[in-house]
Length: 90
Image: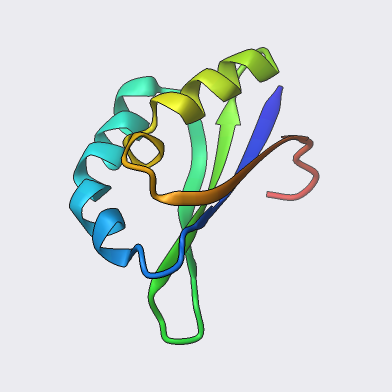
């Protein structure tokens, strides 16, 4: 199964994102379940959220991954949506 995490940053939280980026990327690499990921970009060209596609067996695994993300632990996100996702193209 695949789950999409759509994470939107709190307003004016770019510094929190920058300070925790290395730990976030290490979490992605260590977990071995991230198939695709990248930041959302706002009109000013700044990172303002994240899209992460996980290849896991259950929603509970996706939730656990999201909770363990250093970005989440740092309080970066205003909201996190976790939705089962089916790849059709790509």
